[in-house]
Image (cartoon, rainbow, N blue to C red; front, top):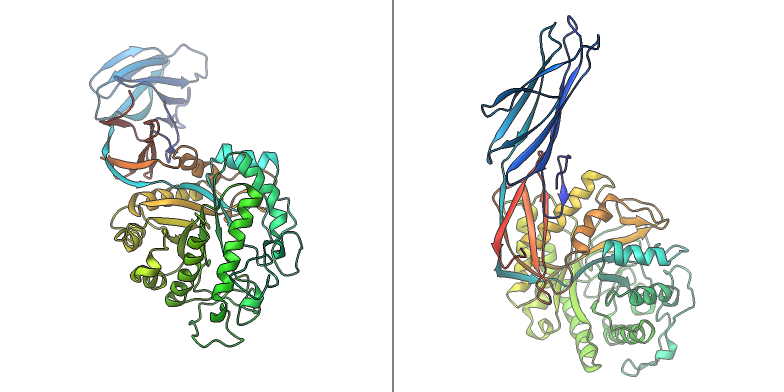
Length: 519
């Protein structure tokens, strides 16, 4: 399989090709000439060369070939030649009409091969899945939120297996009753639209049910803000048009965007009620649940501020309730973003406390800084450090929100590189893009509500469609630093999947070897 473009993102093979053109000097121009090369096959490497020329007077042309490894011949306009492996060759053709001096054209071909070795005996993380947030349009719009075409694009074309939702702030707009240990599911708001809040849970149900019918089994949900009556400022946001990361106030006032400490049990009841109603209405248990999105930040949109200790304390309350109610949803924290030490400070109290740690099923972070792919790059080191926080306790690392990649080829390659970096250096088990779809095709989504798909959609699909839940990452090593890859084996059927990226500036050819691979 041959590909002619230089920066390639594709599955299994990256190959070379090229062409060159040289014009006759203005002092003598009987014709123009160009030379193109096409890789016909490998083992042995066989190229077909086509010389193109135009004689001004229509005379027949003569072609003298030099194949760059010592062979010269007089031949036709099209020649096929077999090359030895492991070198670059400059192939030249001299063309003349027998009356004027020859004009030359040349092209460089390569038979250098990048050795890629896979060792299925060395195993790393088990994949939970790949996915994104939301519906056909965002829940703070008027929709549409679903359609058969959109569901097909998400499930079958993209291959998403994880769908992320937010717990609607209108879900318990009024307290169901005064006892947080007696839950009246009939009092929770499914359909009433409340001004200033995102769409109700009921408005989302057709989409969630359609995804479930299409085969999605893993839905994860995140709290962006508790309902106003549970918070010190009685709002779902910070009440300003400013966004900040304020210090958590252990003695909050009405100016603080925080969960009231006397509402921890009511908050746990809210989370339990949502999980139960989700199962009742969608037909599947929540796969995982997060008690707060980006907990250090007070935003002009739905948000709530915690520090690491407060997040730990709420996690204990929610974890106990989920366990006592028999809810199977995994709990993941802290879904934080920003500089490394701040994120660590948000999750470390929960991991250091044995009581809280028993309720942490995954360490989850938001990925908004990808500037390298190799072990000595800042991003690779950051991913490896974050993985280490939970790994000592057997807790996997998830990436549950990212965006900001340009809607062009460079952005698609950057996103592919980011996924690779997280999988390879952070042993990330789940990867979730910010928004599956919005009204406008921008850097925050993979497609738009009209069905137009970005290049980042197709780059993501290389992972989403082929690396399925349950796949185990296995060792894969490239002999060329510009060819990077991740490899996976699906224990259920022995399928092996490799995703390779050419991050260099020239085409590459790859030879695969290793153990336990298909023929």
